[in-house]
Image (cartoon, rainbow, N blue to C red; front, top):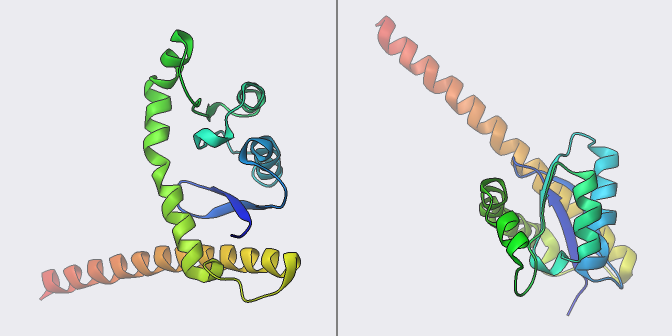
Length: 162
């Protein structure tokens, strides 16, 4: 059993912020995580969370910070909550949420499956390096696709010229 790690990922798959949860639960880190992310990325306007992050106070605070705070409630929903959670915006954002699980899996593939360093500081260092490695991989994939598209356009142009 290890420590939990909470991450914020953008629409392109880059990790914007991460937090090693020492003695915290999900519902205690939601607001500080978004505050930390907003300091670095003030253009952040929406975020999707798991049900474990829900508290009425978290919802209120996150709705003040973000245009759209997708924070599904655990358990039975009131009529008002059903309306909110069935809105097109909310549903669309929730459907994108599984991509975060893919990102977390990628972190495990970049060293977080087993931390070989010792102590809390070593684990935090491992997490940071795994985040950097994943972001570099995403950047490399984007550059590779761009170069590949450029080469394909060049091949089409050469075929047309001959």
